[in-house]
Length: 576
View (tube, rainbow, N blue to C red):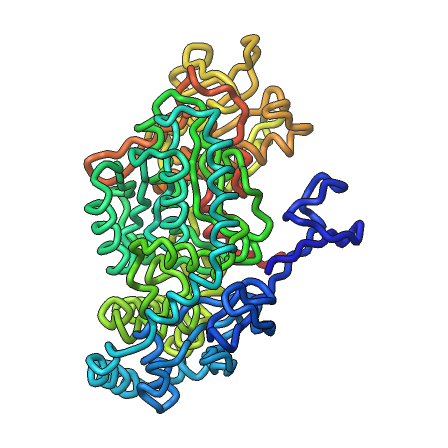
């Protein structure tokens, strides 16, 4: 049962929003799941609606344990098939619950298992696979869905009504479902198509190329089972994850650059191609607040949170794992088989946010992929000078890595300059990349390029404001690494001093040196003015459409020091 309370006004609420505060900033959310000992299943209410018995609180949230995971748990406990005919669930906080009895599971010990231990576990799984088929799982699932029918009706009716109300302002051709192949997007997909009575709603699958094999299998099954539903994949075909890891280091919990490069950027490109000049589209996401602390702060409706031209709604945002599985099992809809192995979440196999339990499962079920990834991590740790690379990886310390320490590419994040002693407000820059036409594209957010006003022999280019008044003068010959910039009017992008204006200039020079075509800038621009063109040699060329650009400079200010890669590769430098 969900409970909402405003801590500011000390009042109980019936929703995740306080009308007094006109926000959910001070709303405290708690949940209670109960257990009916007679029906032997978790219940949403204190009193079982089937047997009418009084239930006791068992946990804040639960999910079903499928026979495969149950057998694995039994093997780890040294008692294979012990709970073959029991009602087994996983409760929040690393607890397994068998027939209503909670038992804490020590996840930490899994990281200490040797390869011999892993091989032995895999052998036992194969040994008992046949005997494990004769179980009581389906019986308990039927009871679970029957006992919680009222909860199913409540969450379904609310979500369907919400979708219908939101979608009324949009044409069906201007909306899509963000489909990841996980349980949450599976539920969202089913809710949207039911609510709108339309199986032709576009689905976009963000193919990062790093998905679990079971995810790829499920997406293929989904397409086959829904022949009228267009399912399009968005993929960054220009970038290779392994090559980028070698160049800028693996993603970490602090800096998950993979999401921006392989997911957000690719989806934004797909949306730009599909919806072209449309200014607003409606996206249905499967985001839920209970997934993480950061997502607990998300709103149900957002505008351009990561992808600028879309309005995003999350119909199931307040659902618990309990609700998601209740819906899936009640509806008997197909889902990603990875969950039956014990994965609580399915995403990328190499994600730094994967838990010790998820990594353990990957050792069991994806040994080749997991092994290659671990080998790379160890080699990377050695390359940046970690004294005990194996322990650095085994302990998970690589997940907390920040910045570009020890990475050669991080040197490009530094823009060296010296003030010009001969001319006021002029700065001399020594670039790590030769001057080219692409450099000038990056100055369009400040104003309008004029190649005729300056001295062509000196390579002078002026940046003008809307009235034609010069703001900046760039002086640098094509092919040279020396660039002189003079600030003629420091009021570029609302700068309040020459120093602030020079910082903004440096943002664009940093971007020029670091740009590897991650496409984060494309997603930031709300006006579709930024485009990165792929070249035959694998490089990209940065282009800003002079007509579409409104000179808002969001692309300059959105990321630290102007460039997403600067944020990824930031290095703490010693102060002298």
